[in-house]
Length: 241
Image (cartoon, rainbow, N blue to C red; front, side, top):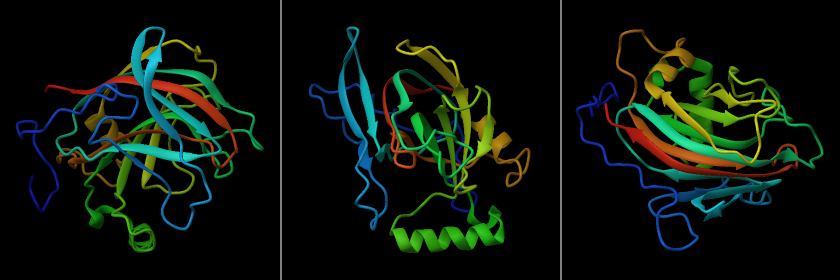
């Protein structure tokens, strides 16, 4: 990895993602780890993750109940093509507010797969850069300067691309949207480098290398709306270049 640019080439060695459904028990396999909200927000419950079986297929179950949580794999390597399968059995429902990914009050996701990048801090606009530094200091976490999320969003139409209403450090694409079939597996395959270059075009110079990936995560949250959801993810992996 180049220390100055934070980029890696496809030729650089990178380990495989540990399969979410691997292992013999119901706990997610290491090195996947559960990450809750930063300290100071302990009153919000943590989204539940466990490995189980649905229609005879082993997969990771993700269950939110007015909660927040992500399952993180600190994977480092080049952004390539990422593929996975997911299904949503219960969309966000039963809460005090309607989910809406474009507003702070409704900013919840029944399912999400995200990629964090070693995005150079100097490319972040001045005000956002200082806000990020403050957030890092308050949270005690080395928060990334750029995160790209793929979401299952029953509140919007599929294909929506936007910035998170809380922070432009997170930008998302709704792959499955309003009206998507429930309790049915859907397969996804995304060119993560191309998606990053497009969604962060205001901070990324065309023709330059996409920043290295620093982590991959899956998750769900219903803390803003007080909602419940239930979904599954499996077969998450990087494809060889």
